[in-house]
Image 1 (cartoon, rainbow, N blue to C red):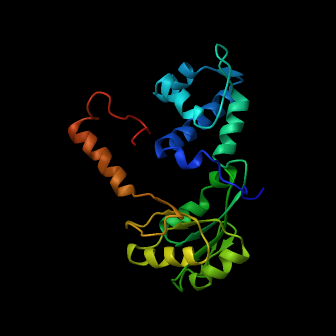
Image 2 (cartoon, rainbow, N blue to C red):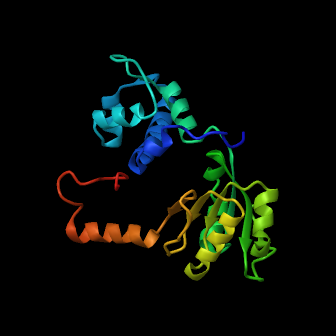
Length: 229
């Protein structure tokens, strides 16, 4: 399936934290479905995710009406509707720029394909890497990035290059029409407002963990688990 023609009208009003929680609900519902459970209440779903029932109801209400009062949510139906909201009922063509340790690991991660993210191309500028085979892909010269974005209908680009090269790669992606970028380079990128940028800084995540080891997990009421926003 291809990219949906229109964005949800609710998309511009929903917080980043709510979107992250939707992903958590989807995974919880997948586990419940696999266990054969047909319905789930907001208190039960909240308990699984260490949230409040009010938060669960608020997140879901941002996208319409779900479930029946007193009966809970139909697990399979809610999972399907969240999948549609998150774009998981489509497949997405992905390119990785950077065939080093991170890029190679991403290409090797099979769960991306299971989730509908199809890595179609991997690029690098190092002559020693260009031409290498990685999980059925051939590392291509990054000089051909723009042409490949158009010919392969790439929709998401993952940047896994050194910090000094990341902005140039991102700019080239934008000029080629890319609207969604996942950045693994340890640098803040400057992109147009209409481009969705996510930056994964593993050093910062480890620093958060080391902080918690030195100072404790945080004051009462502080976020726990994945709810770090």
